[in-house]
Length: 234
Image (cartoon, rainbow, N blue to C red):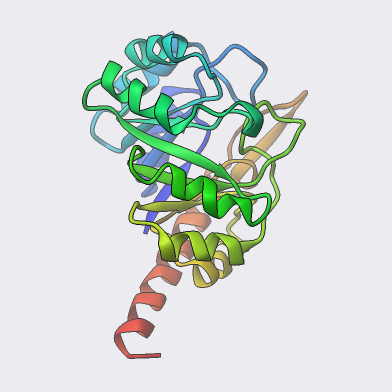
């Protein structure tokens, strides 16, 4: 079970998450008021500090391919996480063009699970993305994700069953519900942002390392249990 945690704001935080067993460390390089955003320069410093301890994921809500490409070149992530507003998402054709612009880059495409239309959205990116991330959407956030609420896991389960790509489940996941989510959806990985934060006031936060550790432990335990159950034919 791949564990992905957003959003890191310091090198020390990134290293700490990797040491807790987080596989994908996520950063939000932006200047548009997104939760936990940092500058491109800070993002690059964090990623350089993490080194090979974890896979490095950079998020973008942009639609302009040139701006996205510039961020990637500045930050140097392993994976680009595209999660623009559902009404202005980078199209499958745009993702293909972006990958031509940035050879070797892996793309994680966000799918807003707002209803059954998510099935078709997921299907449309199958031939161009490397990963899918199924997330909740709030109009108050400038993109898909960071909504802090769960969505209809039955739809996410159908996407997982029909996808040829690795699928990460996100959206309001916490140490308290991640095991239930894994049992319901059977994703390749799980993601947490809001429910593993420690609020600092004024909209600011840092990662709550105790809750991250609980999230990792609960996710890994449920993944192991689910694997054993399938092996036993349960």
